[in-house]
Image 1 (cartoon, rainbow, N blue to C red):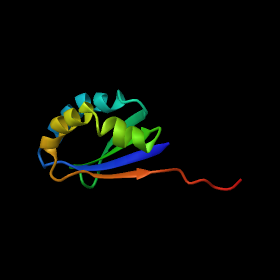
Image 2: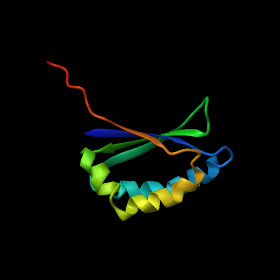
Image 3: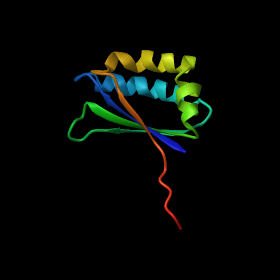
Length: 99
């Protein structure tokens, strides 16, 4: 499993617009094969920053299955106008510990 994290900094005053758009946008990513679910958290100290976490079965499910699909363009069209800057996206894999 791969975990994608995306820090999304929203233009001040556009947080409600972002959250409304995210209701529709989240369906686009959740419909992608390999998507294991999506969570969203809002910053306490920085309320214009959101942490979006998405579980993927594989990195290709995100980079190819979603990012190269029409759904990604729709996702960006919905959320992009609220961004103060491009999202910071990283991928995380599990650490295996010896038994």
